[in-house]
Image (cartoon, rainbow, N blue to C red; front, top):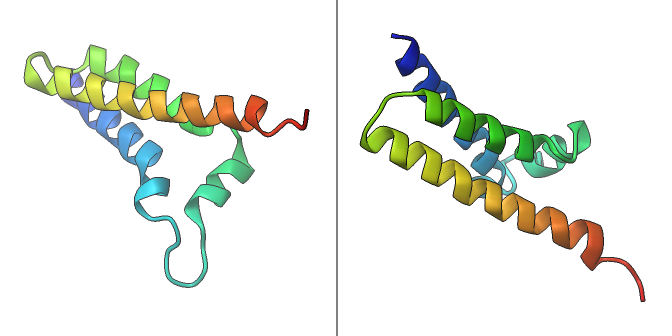
Length: 92
């Protein structure tokens, strides 16, 4: 039972990590990515690491493979964007 909860929490972490890209600007001019970045710049990275850890603790088989793979891909995207944001926008 606990492994199911870990898998569900891993899927929720993945959804929270990817949702700002899936809904760039929702109706009513509320930008979810800006809202998350105002809370903490590294919050999507925390969601990614938590999703990978919870995915490893979750159900075995294809579910674990997909959860860890999706969270790792999302974490890689955010790591790349964080690297570009920190080092790419510096003026020479």
